[in-house]
Amino acid sequence: SCNPSRLRFDCVNCYLGVGMDSSLDIPTDATIEVWTRGHSIQDNKYVIADFDSFTTKSQGSLGYRTTSSGDHFKFYQSNSNNTASTIDGMTIITTETWYHLAFVRDDSVKTITLFVNGVQDGTVSYTGTTVTNFSQVGNRIIGCSSTVDLANADVAKAMIYNTALSPSQIS
Image (cartoon, rainbow, N blue to C red; front, side):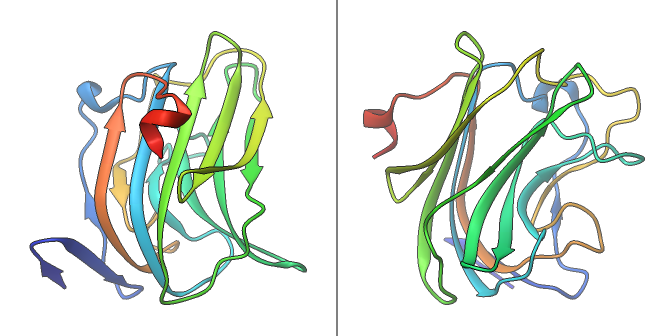
């Protein structure tokens, strides 16, 4: 459902595809911000995703991770040297609670940082360059990474920046 301030994704063929135009490529330096509230948390369900249609390559996807210690947010990206970088955040998340998420990729120092509610929640270093030009890129999607990875969540104020925002710009 939709109202003026948010989109609700209910895990039943409900997502927003925003297309494959090259203007939507996530550049080497980037920040993705979003407010989200999960109604149920399931492992590897994505709030914002950008996966190649035929592989698991991603320019940057933000979703959920379920571990033995609880439910967390995660960020995943593919690198040019056929490696992947993943951050599993430390914050234990609960359903029906709004969270402000931001991921910041700073290519000059090869780091990705995940922020939850303005506080650094995890960081990882990477090698190579971020995959930004797929030969067969999939849709940029809000609400899931494919029609089988549907998130059961509300999403509001999703923003993509072509720069690495500082912590003070996020909080």
